[in-house]
Length: 384
Image (cartoon, rainbow, N blue to C red; front, side):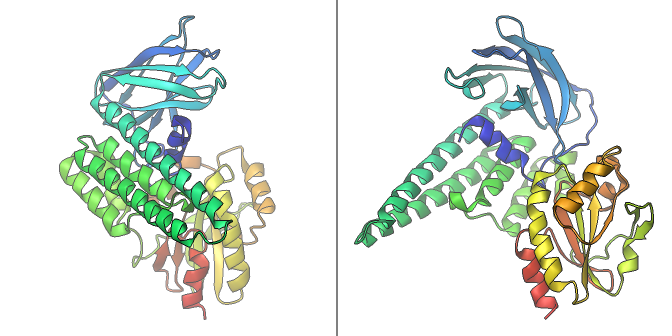
């Protein structure tokens, strides 16, 4: 996996990154030289720790010799991406006032970084070392998986397949242990959360054979980080959000449907209702929609429905409604078209989408963050 793919894997983690966060007095500069590229613009993208909305905070025209300089001000340590031609070049952490980042693009493909070096920032250096080691170990798993696939097509290779299977299990355990060791070694809150999120994000992909950390294990890491960095607001927000809604009353709210009629969550009392927070622009949300459609069609006549809450923006109403039709979302939909400025974000402490809560007929949350087949399985237990 290359650095570009590695960075994109991080961006998919719903609970670790998003918009928000105002610039403060903590200024820092990223500068260096980017070689072997025809691109002229370079951007600095901020990744606040508590939501998943990326924010471009600075841009610069590269000089003819590839030199550039970018700057930003963040209230506390967090992750930043240096972007070129729409692709993340590398990730850095603002633990020092000045960071040097030099990169060279490959000869065959000018879209991929061949190598990069970061200096001046201990946290950014540790971040790079972690990604490099993690991805090298993933490559070993990939190679062993290919061997197993080839052997499975040949008869009388059971013993060899068993040996490779044991090796794959050991490879996966080594990655988990390496990630835990990196978390313990980390002396920066943004780095700690990066490592946790990076592992969990890739562990959710069955192709990598990694076992995701349990919620209890995640909470142990976050609790430890909060004790280590008690003043970091992003960590505190993550810690609070992980406490979850289950067992609590679902906060009531009202939003207009596509025709402007105000729809209130409490009007669904007496039914099980999945409150689904999504948006037409959110690819992971669109990928989840078929699972919700399947569950809805199966249980809609058994006292279950869905309330879709879109985080689309002003001027994108047509795009929102087009997505509703394209994805066959035949339930009630509402949106204030306020994007991440919607009051619903704070009301439900939403760090990223897709996100949902399953509310019982009395208005209490009985499940949250149901992904894939989890919604249908949950409904099977309560709507027999």
